[in-house]
Image (cartoon, rainbow, N blue to C red):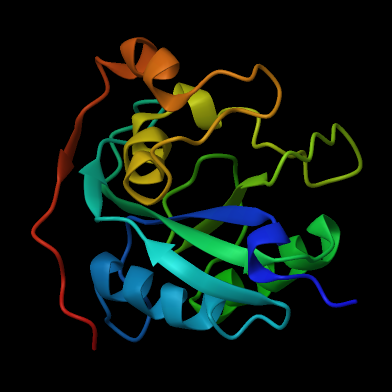
Length: 177
């Protein structure tokens, strides 16, 4: 029997960028493009997109600010397979993996997949630093205010005091191209 949409787990993808693409699109335009690309992933459908936020890099690095958001998706796919699709989208946007935390034209991370807890193999789910980042928690709250960390069972509000000092602001929302 096919699953009904209410039984399909939510998958949350963090979208971020702080460099223009080689073709000249801004970080904000690239993030909107990424949402369209996420919608093309077989087995998943976009059910919500957060507001967009501008945030300082974490950890601090002197890089340009990031544009960040979270996409809520429904579907049931293998985490490793999904990670491969995300890496392909990043590569299409011009991301070249060099050093950790380098500036980039696109960054896509699996934040959580339903109640899945997975320490190995890659990807680790939920994302091990998601609850330590305002640029994940605030957009996640936009698309799923009652999200709970699958590891601790705590809701978003429990983690917000720990990220209160991180520089972040809600942006005027860019227009879809």
